Length: 205
Image (cartoon, rainbow, N blue to C red; front, side, top):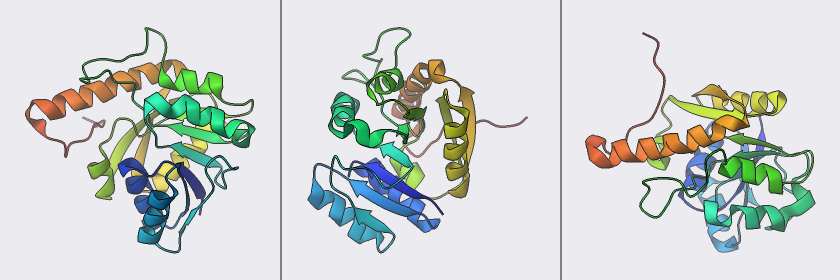
């Protein structure tokens, strides 16, 4: 099984970490709030540990479970400790009322992360189009992902499949802005009557 590192200690960190542990993976939490990270690790049990914020992550796959507004600062804090890692960007650069994105046309959070990350790091966009409560249910769902490095995407896809998640590759990093708009679409549908227990997916007809 895989060792993953989750930077963050909020609801998405909890949902991913708990689901990963149920499927046999080892999880390392890293957070500015060490107390929250330790509480998550204690809740999950022996498959979860806590690492020092800013130290070299144990996991080959590193999940950025932080807000968009602070993600570049986190990348800068870790610096070369992230070299060679696969960074899973799940951020959504929403504006204040989630009616649009704060990024400009042609840009994306993932592109900004890739530009700030050390050489040899590969960014894969994923998990930004699923609600944490849906993920926590541990039911079979679809997750869309994008990135430029085929090997990194294959690693992420294999991890997703191990969690009973169907990985749907939408293309290269230029498609990450589309996934961020898909996040807006999901929130809009949920907010306008569908509720927050829904998930985006693809169906063969």
